[in-house]
Amino acid sequence: MKKVVILIGNYGSGKTEIALNMAVKAAAEGRRTQVIDLDRINDYFRMSDHVKLLDEKKIGLVSPTFVGAGLTQTNMPAAVGSAFAQDWDLVIFDVGGDAAGALSLARYHMDFAALLPGQLEVWDIVNIRRPMSETAEKILKLKADMEGFARQRVTGFIHNSNLQDWASARDLRDGYPVIREASEASGIPVVYTTGRPPFLAEFLRDETLDRRFIGTPLPLELYMKRSWGNFTQGRL
Image (spheres, rainbow, N blue to C red):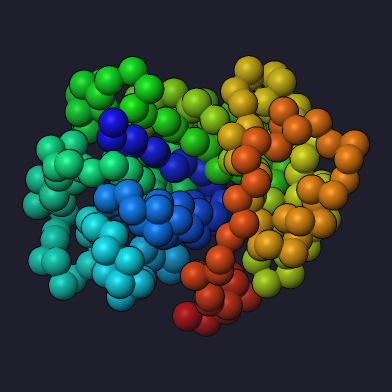
C-alpha cells in the first residue's frame, strides 16, 4: 500500500535533510519513492540542488525550483498530482517552514482525504535550537498554526535538535525533555529521533531515557552541506 508522509516544521528544523535521508533509505530498500518539494519559502536549502543524487537513486522529484523539469507555479499542481495518481510505494512531501508555507498543502486536501486509513502520516520535525521551538508550549503553538493552514493533523513528532555545524549529542539531550513534554501534553507520539550517527549513538547510550519518547533512531547522512553561518549573515 502506498505510504504518504508530510514533513512540516519550523525554518531550519531539518525537513529537507530528513526528507532526503528517508527517500534514499526507502529507495535502497527497493521502494518506488517520490519527493514533492513544496518549500517555496526557503530557496537556500533546496531539494532541487540534489537532482543528481535523486536521479542516481531513482527517486522521483517534483519541485518548483527544478528548472530542468519546466515546472512553474502554474503547472506545479498538476505535477503534484502524480503523487496520488502514480504507483509509488512512498511519497514524501517537504513543506515550507512556517504556518503560511503549510498553505501549499491545503489545495490538495481532497487528494489526501481520499487516501485509505493508515496511508497518510503528518510528522512535525522539532529542533529546539530554532526560534519558536525552544519550549513545549511554543512547539504546540506552532504545530497548531501549521495544522490550521495545512488542513492536516500532525500524527507524530520527529526530534531533530541540532546546531548544524556545531551539532553534538548535547543538542539531543537538551531537546529530549522538551519533546517529551510536548508529546505528553498533546498525546502525539515521537516517531523518530534523528542525528548524525556518532551524536545519535552517544545520546542513545543514556539508559535513563524513556524509549517511548525516542521512537525509531534515524542516523542522518549530511546532504545539505552548506555554511549556516554564511546563510544567517546573508553571504550566499
